[in-house]
Image (cartoon, helix red, strand yellow):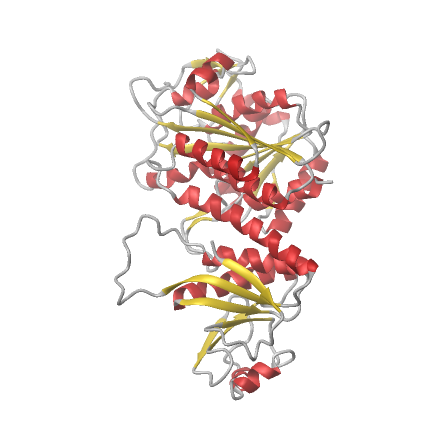
Length: 490
């Protein structure tokens, strides 16, 4: 992960290979006149000729500077309405450009910034520098560029900004972990591997970690979870991580993540085209692990339990069939209409199991439905909940994290779509209101605690370049989880 530090140095005098300057729309020399002098008036000429106007994501690279920084990278923030979000985006873009240029290290300057802004810049720098190169052969030495390894933020080096730096590093570490896990191919990021990562987090942060396998799930009566896992030889895992930052009597927040390490659709098999993207069907689980990393790093004063249901959904001679009926941990019988509606079967048993922790609130995240992508595209997460105030709270957390959500209904009028002729409920209501009926299915297994469901199918990964980060995993829902927990910390 990128190493980030603070410095109160004069930006015009820093000898960095790259000085990235974040500028608002219609920039002036205010605050950067000394840098202009060091560049022999290059900035003044650039602004005068309108070669750089400070539009959002606009960049201009100037090189050949005689003294001070060897290169300048101007990064536009546009008309700033949310400074934290704008700074984070500019920092991410700066780091990504620095990575492409092969400078090895950079300095980021946006004038004097406070603790929250320092946190945003730090998290942005780490996000922009992140790459997944573990499975690529080394570039020939003659063609290799220096990877971006260090970044310095120019601002006052105070207790407050150092706290912001530390928090930003925690956010960046959590999101980097989630993105790495999501990017790994399904033959490497298996249920066993997720359990191994959980144990490593436990050792690092002194968390209690429990891992249940197939025989344990059978003993617990988790017939819904096991129905998904019965088509694969890989051992399914129910993983729990306990962070005890609050008082012993304080009820925990429970975060639940869907961990389908690969989803073929089972007997209701998916089309071959694009099926490789189904390695991302464990982004909810990756989000839980990333959030637990960040929460523990920040030492938040709150109790949190992270839960992951990990398996693969495969077609085989032992796989569940459409029309089968299984008994859930909650005791309700489920008719399997579509074996590709498997994530909700896993989550149903996890939501039921969560009762044993007597939680103050449960938040689950899952790449659950294609329907939410049709409804909201790739911009907003679908948000469902049993309490309007709780929905408002989670929406605010998402906005603060830069992971916007949008509320969708859980009206009883939709329940007829998941009524079964032979069981208590069926796992698919068909195409109409598919995201809603999936959430209503989950609600059947919620009892005794407030609950929020995040459908992140459209936001957890991207099939196109997002400018500040490449195509692939976005880190959602780490930020939403984290900001929600921070909001409840004492």
